[in-house]
Figure 1 (cartoon, helix red, strand yellow):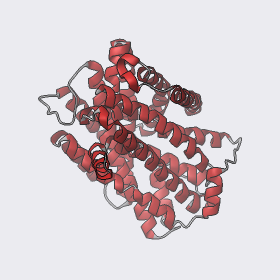
Figure 2 (cartoon, rainbow, N blue to C red):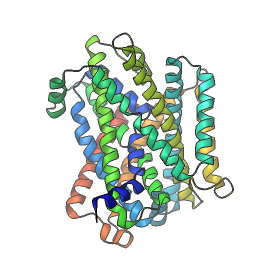
Figure 3 (cartoon, helix red, strand yellow):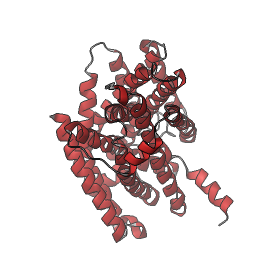
Length: 407
């Protein structure tokens, strides 16, 4: 096969892996990385290396199942483990994803206020815009919009370079971990894993691959899409930590939200770095507000055997479209209510995601090793050692993360 043909094939299947991984850097993710950089400087950069490896291993398996079976993960869990198990899992995921959606609309509102616009205007505008995009557009159109929007994440790389960090110190902390017994250090280490590998990603990636109709013969190109996406998302995470570690950490500036990071950067750097950080937060929040409700609609409809897909209409897939619509409408309205328990919902979302992730991963590995389902595309022994080791590590970290979040 010629190089040009390989490139054309890759461009035709590109999308699900890159979009899923990049939009994992939503408002919650950016908040985590900003807080990590502000509180610990470059000290936690090393965690991104094992996190990236774990993300690639897990997403590649899920993507492979989507290509081989042509079905979403919810579909496969329902068919192989029963409706009751699937229903309970979907109910928990619905709650968790609603909290994530609220977090993204809160990030959009905060970024708009930083840029001088009222959240009472911009939140409804944002909600209506993404609703029209998904309910009236085709899958290909929506995917292209999301891919172009992912380019804006490059702004975080630019802001990191503009911060003028000590690159020797950055490299040293990335390659040579300097562990601390500080409880907050341990908590933030776990938080990086928890915000990078989430349950909704697994369901959305597999569903989007299935809807796009990627075939077995294009599996290698799809795998490359996943690997590139996972690599890019953690490169972005790296530069967010570097920016805040360079400009906020030396001054002891403690933050709790990504929007606070953008505001804190204004007097400490060029206005351009501040604007880039705020604009990227707005972009990430809005993309998260598109994808997380979509993931919710996908896996609930698959679990219940209902029609699902962006290419469908309200008439063809009423449950899919109404779940998407109500998730966006309720989350955006909640953000506009003074005194609404936004923080509680976000913490609850993190805890539920943490509790469910081990179950989702165990189901995924069991399914990927089902020869009747996967044929020759099951895991090799070496890959199983890597994947089970990754899952065991994630489970241990997740249990710790849930414990820390609760107590």
